[in-house]
Figure 1: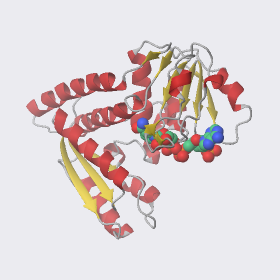
Figure 2: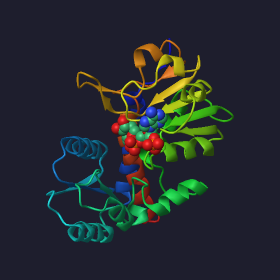
Figure 3: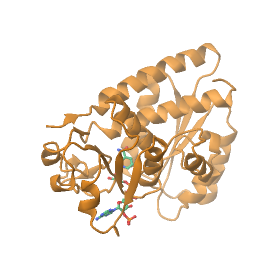
Figure 4: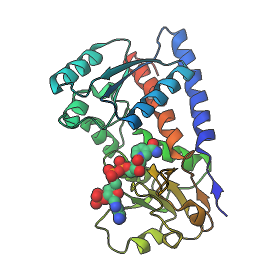
Amino acid sequence: MAIRIDGKAVAEKVRAKVAIEVEELKKQGVTPGLAVVIVGDDPASRTYVNNKKKACAQVGIYSEEYALPASTSQDELMELVAKLNAKKDIHGILVQSPLPNGLDEKAVVEAIHPEKDVDAFHPSNVGRIMIGNYHFLPCTPAGVIELLRSENIEIAGKNCVVIGRSNIVGKPMAMLLLHNNGTVTICHSKTKNLKEVCRNADILVAAVGKPKFVTADMVKPGAAVIDVGMDRDENGKLCGDVDYENVEKVASYITPVPGGVGPMTIAMLLQNTVTAAKSQNGLK
Ligand code: NAP
């Protein structure tokens, strides 16, 4: 039976460390500040934003919420981003995705100052991740690396398979595994023999967005299986991309959903906000 990696507990440790860093910064006259922008009334986005604000408050990070109606124009949104870029008490800017139809998300991301781009989605930060010289790591993939570290799971020299090639999870995940000297394969909807490719993985990361997509016959006995998915099962219950019940019988490590990667994403966002506050104030 696989060891269940407790994302909540690991995230709690990261948050405790962040809280200490925030306290230290406050002694030096700097309070890390995060602006969270939400446009429209998507209920899932509202939940994410609420969770992020709550997490900020818990570690002493100052946060501001900008809730805009779905009718907001591109110009209005760009103006807000420009205002936040200039605001001295705001070190990180996060625009919750998805934006309502008609708004150009790519343009908004590119308008955020790269040093305030705590999601690490700006092309300049994406490029920095590629060359391994970054201000911030993208929150979800960075959280996955922390989870692997928490169990001393060796990445170097291991076959790592990432299912999914999105810009926010799959691609940066693959890059971070590569930076940690994994031998990385990226799979997607056009991959042939997916099962065989996955069965070769010592570390298998699922970022597909399809409930229980990864079945036990796709997993190498003894593999570490990390489930990034946040899906709904046939009863509307939150579940991951991995068929947990059956895969845990084959894997050596597995992350649950909820309580695995999800809590890490927010913890890494807090960490990035502190990093941003330090660098914008010339502190280490
Ligand atoms: P996405 O943009 O929809 O990407 C999904 C990826 O899966 C695509 O690259 C797609 O391939 C691939 N895929 C789809 N069907 C496949 C198949 N049959 N075989 C192999 N690959 C297939 O999704 P995302 O934004 O990366 O998110 C993935 C999941 O992670 C979602 O459940 C999301 O909710 C979750 N998520 C969780 C967190 C967290 O904090 N825990 C954060 C972000 C996302 P193509 O490129 O060929 O279409």
